[in-house]
Image: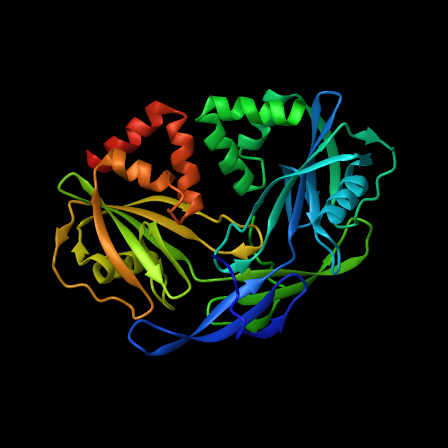
Length: 184
Length: 184
């Protein structure tokens, strides 16, 4: 839904967002300037350690405090999985050898923006975090029910994931399968 | 959550999106360039006519077909309610004297973007639509259960509203109150 057509021209390069425009033919044969944005992918992780799920309780200079999946922004030239591993290590000091891509979405039609959700099982705590000076993160360990409650709370940031969890909550066998997928 | 600070400078003016940047002090005293976008508000309407709710089945040059609440984009200098009335008339040929603001949200932290949801009761069909050459819209009349099903379908565009309906579905008295608020 969010593809930027090949003939689009980049008209602005920002810190996060680039702006593209192109002339689009409309249904009456006239044309109009269409506009879409592109931003780096967001990498999020459901890290499992000793039957608990780690999530972030975070504050940023213009936002928060809020709860969210751990993770961050893909860097230039980086593979999504490598970025997810880097973010999990930086934010929570966790490593895993069992990574699985749970979901990838493009939530917003006017922005070329991928959101990845990974599951990282059997994490080990390697102890050293490396926080960005633009964030304060406290890692919280939750059991499955607490995790679901956190994702559905008003404080949780990440509406695409919240929507998926709401849909699973309306379909209990799916929520049960999700629990099994995460916790084994 | 999405406020652009007063010291921010507009660094790009687009067709839909304007880009703002400012120097933000971080937690270690260093600074970084922060960036947020601004776009016109989206006005959406739940129009009720003879116990049915009108929704749009729409196609746009780069998107669709999809289902959505009727409505569109706020124009420069326009009041949100006036814009909602204009859009309902243009898209569906409907008018009402009983308007109510149901909800206003800012769904996305990096975009200053309001989404309004209005209820328009006792609509009358004044017959003349005026479609934008950039959209094809077919108006569908649904009863309440069909409306909820449409909003939860994969074809529906408007995740903020979908999330609200999912939450009401998990809390049946709230869904019942919503039905009563719409249909009386």
